[in-house]
Length: 239
Image 1 (cartoon, rainbow, N blue to C red):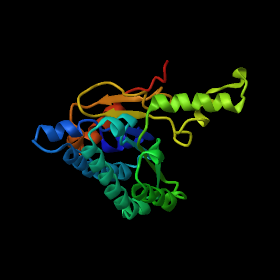
Image 2: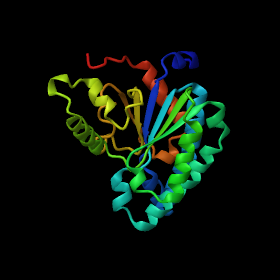
Image 3: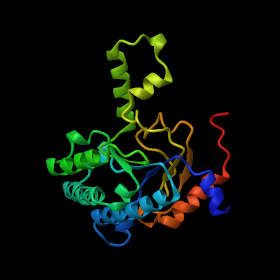
Image 4: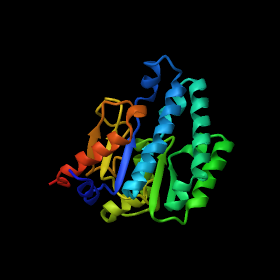
């Protein structure tokens, strides 16, 4: 399929579950956080290519609540340092500002991250809050199960009558209320499954792509191949 045809059927919202950083590092005799560092470098390349292609909304699941509570302290500390370094680069990136990319952080990171990291994240949000050409979303300390439970609690607390609850009611009470539904979800790492109810409401009609490559090896060419695969599919939307 030609590049022009790919662009005509480009997903509006692409989500990547970047699995395999730790296994990538282990197979090379490296520390787990070295896999995360390589994954962060790959994210820069994928984001730049997605912007060039014209993807309007690009999301990545950076960490689950489980990642931050169950992994060894040394790995957790290293991950937080990588986030701090990477988000500071984003804050000053010409790719972000020239392309008018609005940055969002979704999850319970406010209660999990150190002040130095939260400061940079808030600066990213504030510096890009008026941008409207693209959206870049990082899911951090996020669980889809928690998101749905919290949404139901909010709806109950609001006093909405059960008969008045609609799909829009649910959407407006989700952490992802400002994001479009997902068109295309990619999971790397060779394990074809979803995790922790990730974006369960928003992926209802998404096309799925499972790559055998660990995330550090899921480069620009593989992203383009996945998008071409998406372009060749017919979207049934449950029909």
